Image: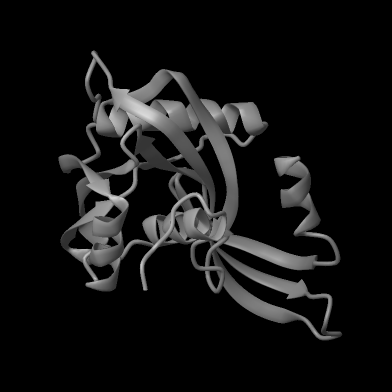
Amino acid sequence: MLICAVESLRRDWQVISSTTEFDDGHVAVLREKLLTPSRETERSWTTVRRKPAVVIAAMTAQQKLVLIRQERIPIRATIWEMPAGQVDELCNSQSLKEVAVRELREETGYELAPHGSLEFLGDFFSSPGFTDERAFLFLARPVEPSAAGHAHHESEAIVDCREVPVRELQRMIAADEVRDANTLAAFARLCARGIISIEA
């Protein structure tokens, strides 16, 4: 189903030319000329292609959400976020779930409780004006600390992890303490689905 959704996005878009200016396996920069569904003349665009990602809204039995605090070099800041990670190959929904479960444990040291479940909440595009980066949202609940603890990747700089009540996360978002698109999108989706409620 997910792959079909990806392919349907490309219907009626004709690529006239595409030149790769940079590619390191994680990010590729392309100069493209295309015919779009609404225009008869070609358009030129610079597109950044990036691997898809999973974002995990991890909720404890006490209805708290697990956040990590991570150094982010591009913005020169350390920020609070929901755990997330890139997907090397988008094969099927099962592979996405496997990545989500792995990233949750590696980044937070939490895992699904024995009776826990992983629910797909949909997807979003982080910044479609210049990149095709697509993130798949999951709700993991209930989660609990893993006996094995976290297993941070050497490229990561996660400096803290904590459980945050929904009301506190709402306050953090309103106070501009949470600013990454992944967490904001996941919070909005949780609210829209009625999984969490916020106070006016």
